[in-house]
Length: 317
Image (cartoon, rainbow, N blue to C red; front, side, top):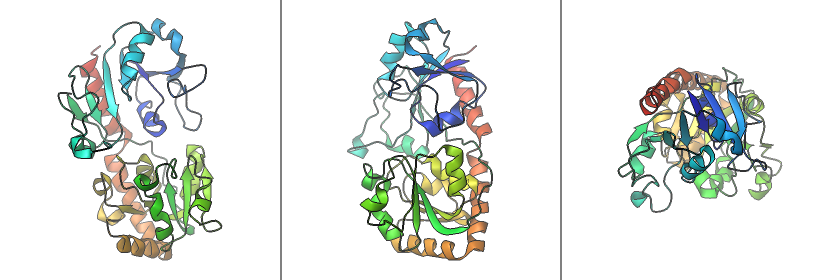
């Protein structure tokens, strides 16, 4: 198929465009949110082609992948015709969660794909035909060395996303093990948390460089209170890192007991950080279990098989 998809979520899109199709990514002159084009920090295959938005109408697009509500009208405007589509919901609901209705809840013409069963459970999807296609991740390889007795955290915009991302918990967690942070807009975080000199920040590294540096940390910390399921968590597991995570949203499904410690009890998580940081053999053993679990559940073959079944039912050849 020839599939049009916006570059909204870099990690998810990286996995999606490794399928067996041709992928058109809209491009606008300002490379703004509606037209970023190809990613610069993610390894995308040659089957991904950025197309100026005003030339999309000349493309024989078979299907559109929506990820934000306004893209439905944008696609109709740019393509000049109606094309079958599917909507991917990456996020947990916000606001008054038990009453949160999805933007597609009142229509039944566009299949709605949730990326976790937690999302499917918590969103009020109304009349929308829903599916769950769990994440798939490009295997970075077993990179883990754990040579540094430190914890790694991956989070974008940790200051803006403060309690959602668990940023406020990091000074407490830093008493269990020194913490380093990776992601976008992290440069000022050590100073903001009063951890200058104790926390190192790695600002927006290319994915491969981030994986290599993260793998040197002995344990992966996932402090998120409210997120769908961070792909960085799955990537860390595939790298071979043991996990310490809050028992929130989908993390309880993703991390088996042999791969780390998942709990809502801060003292339990602190003890786990301390133990992994100071027992490298234990950390390596848990990391191997984490990698095995992630490869079994979140491999690309399963991900693309699930997607291809759905895509062929929406836009049969």
